[in-house]
Amino acid sequence: LTANILRIANSPIYRGRVETTLVAAACARLGTATVHELLSSAWLRTTLPDSLPFYGEKAADFWQHSVATAVFAKRLAPRARQAPATAFTTGLLHDVGKLILSRVVLRADAESLGRARLHADVRLAERTLFGVDHASVGATLAHRWTLPHDLERALGEHHAPTVDCPLGALVHVASAMAHGFGFGVAGGMRRVLEPKALQAIGWDQSELATLGRGALSDIRRMTNAIDHARG
Image (cartoon, rainbow, N blue to C red; front, side, top):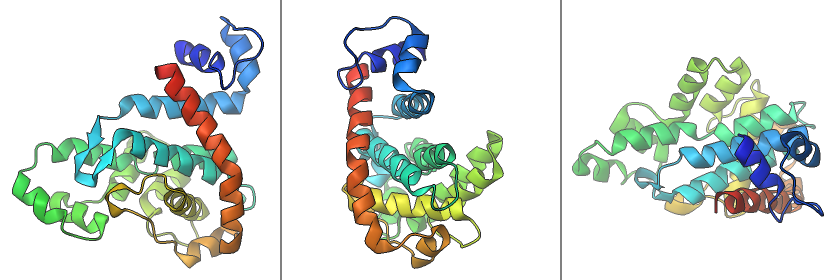
């Protein structure tokens, strides 16, 4: 964590006039919220395999989609009366179930994998091959990690949002926006936006494009800083 903080704080994207070797100075430069976002995003990057073959995704594409979803969720959160930090974390983790299933699929036989991938609905393909989908796996993981119940429920419902789970609806919209702006569209997994999700969070679809364009610089800044620190 210390090394990541210092590398990111001293990257060209965030560096001031001089480099710093002190964690406290680096945190002061970045701000507490930014440190949390950068470190959690960097952590996710280090956990990924080279690819997610079942989903037809490269690790970098999966990660960029997760970060973009997190940033969009944070931007949408205030009007939805959700905590921006919680929205960011939930957006970052919303597809974590795919990482678990990707590890399992390496042991699946090729014939079963081929049949499952014929399905247009990714979650149906998951249930065909594994008996569960990535949303339910993510919710189970959140429960085992003893994360807040709202976050656990949001991970489980981000594909099928309900009006009484605004955090899940928020992440659903944020993920659809990430797909819409080109983050994570490999394998034909573009998200269909559910109107009830917008109703649950108090946003109108006509406003999303403007919000999304305004957040693109934050997404690029974050991903570039982490990639630079890794390199």
